[in-house]
Image 1: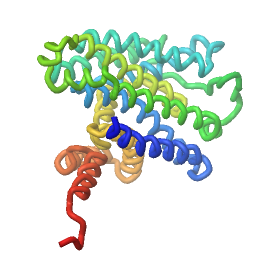
Image 2 (image 1 turned 90 degrees about the horizontal axis):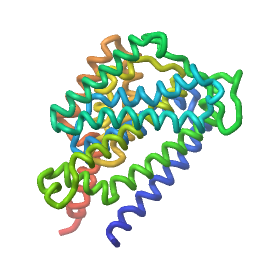
Image 3 (image 1 turned 180 degrees about the horizontal axis):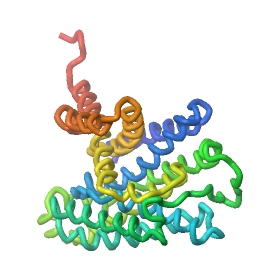
Image 4 (image 1 turned 180 degrees about the vertical axis):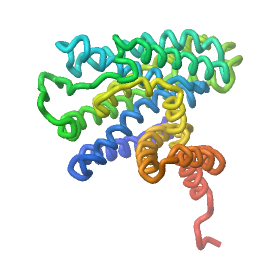
Length: 332
């Protein structure tokens, strides 16, 4: 217990410091970079959910773009068909409910298999949803997508306000609070008995089953929880982007989610958060530098896998551990 407290205490103060720093960002960053940071934070919420499957359950999904799109489209469809209910306090629960339904269906089908079969099933289901979003033009807007209006937040209307003013004001602080709560909840999940059960399934499925863990059921729970976080990220992102379209359900975006997690380092809890924010900036600067930006992103991924398979945070953690083990300079 003493060792655990020694680990959690500095982590708590680090989180608190980062939270305070984020609260002051609107006074420091230009509006453009602030909105870019907001986009990265929404991806970070999504990456936390994705890593619950990848690191803690040992399942690699290539279909999480569909779950992200579910949350985003839930917001768009509410604004299109139920404008009277277009309030943040209603939109977020609706997005979570839609994500719960879709992730339950996807999970029920996918968790029957593991390894490559799980990944391919998730990919196939995401492409089915992508096709529906494109073909059901009268409902979803087809390839044109849906415009996201500014929502009412806790009784306050922002009608007539420019989006960048909305995003650099009340919405930014709301997003930071949602991000902080999401991080705390996910940290509690992975360190709970449920999280430990998922890790035992990842390490040895047969032994986990022998000690009484219902493997398939726990995998389904993990998939649903992952889908809820991913859908929440999609819902929060829709307000930042101002428009949702079927491309976020396509396999390429699902691949980007994997890239974010690998970039930050999936073996460290905070790795996907850092990877999601870094990827947002990396993609932007790659696009502005060259029309072959996808080649640049791909080359970066190859270098990352070869030189830093644990990601950026994993590499730093390994370096820090090596420095702690090495003898002090000047000691005979």
